[in-house]
Length: 259
Image (cartoon, rainbow, N blue to C red):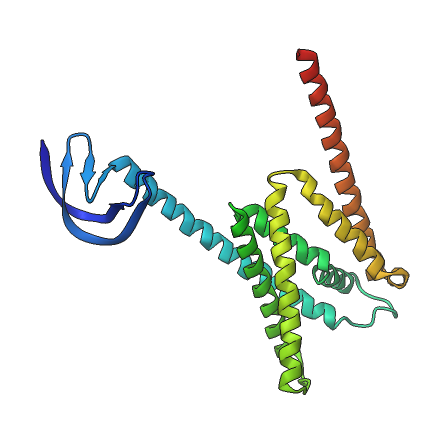
């Protein structure tokens, strides 16, 4: 027995035998329901399936909102401290604790490893597929570099006068390199959920950054603090891998003993 009911429902269309569905705009329509809660709108779908689909849609919107919030906050922080890093005061004549902390944070945040780590965080938290990791990593990094350029232009008292062609090439290089880095970082963050061995790329990046900094970076207090931080991060990654290897070995031994 079917009961006539009028209410606002999504238009649901069955596309194929694999239960692929299309949820369109909401319309005020009349639908037939039976006692088991079956909706007959161009196909058959239960109430629970409808609610599950709507719930997933709400989760997706919340997930997307969280990503945008993270992008705006983290991108703004990175942009501000990167500009500060480009305009550090002279620290050779002594420095207060406050200036040292700000300078240290600015230099650290403006470093390639931190930019890479933040892109990894995006891929780790927000990406459900490798495609999401590529897209979200690129979007976050582009937003961060945009914040940096906007704040840098506002901060400058005397703008640098260069030709339009040189400026366009400069922006193209910056955005291109940043996008590639963001994509790689997002993918690494995504693969960390699959295997912790993906952290090896970060380990290689930290070691490379120490070589790029060179011996001259050990001549000032901020450079020393930065290099020590990189060394501690390298040590933590090495310890994590030692723990993982030992755990895997013990797990294999237990399985062999059971067999």
